[in-house]
Length: 399
Image: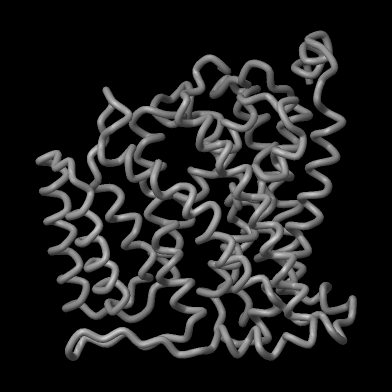
């Protein structure tokens, strides 16, 4: 398995791990600022109106929404590139490779949602948040893994990456189906025309990245005005970029390589800093026991463990999948906890699900508490589960 890991995947894992550390620092800084004398300046800054206009075509949003709708479209564009590569030539390119992460990811999305719904059945105003604990933050999770250095099997990192990619596909589908507003068919039609042009460029295997970038920006603007969430334009645009399976120098490979450090070290940390700030002054511990934050926290902590570990175990026992070499069940359990770090995607979906300040703050409390406990528990469990030798590895696989 380790030999099958491509140099591009190694590069991806290294950047994601380092980016995860930067994201952790950005989130900690946001919490510190939001609970300091700078708090009012922090929130006022995020509310600054930013206007872009081209004739009668006007986009007028506060800075926070430019970050969430604009910068995050770049993140989703990169996600789309990674999904396409993984499906055609990576960890999801065959059933043997994809079966375990696919089944585990399905469990890791379904069970957290059910846990959340079970705790919020008597709170109908919260039901729209059912998808919040279904998300996994790959950068944060790999950042925690990186703290253990080379002791962590690369196969385990690759499995976490594959689960997170499938999780992202699920999140994209959920956003498209459940978190889009009223549709403007004219703008949606204009976006579809741009998409067709991009498909034609891709089919013609145009090598220059400039026309793809210009058309992607145009499609983003139309999608933003259409009522469909604008970040989905990033995914749609990415799927049109041609993949060169025989070379690492095709448009998709070049764009992925160029974008990755910008997303890992700038886009995601900015999003984390802008969205993780929540005022804790005067907060009572009982606030964490309210249905909304509790449903999110337990959905992540309990739901991810039951979903990922449970579905993976059933898949292997039913011979639908195989456990990767050099990976044991205790490490899979630790992985299920690290996958419970929802942070970026959970906060993103939370912002789509709710509009009131009280609910958004409750989402932040649930995501931050659940993700923090998951990160600490996952780190400790993985640290003690790393085998001292091959003999222990073989014993663990007999679970």
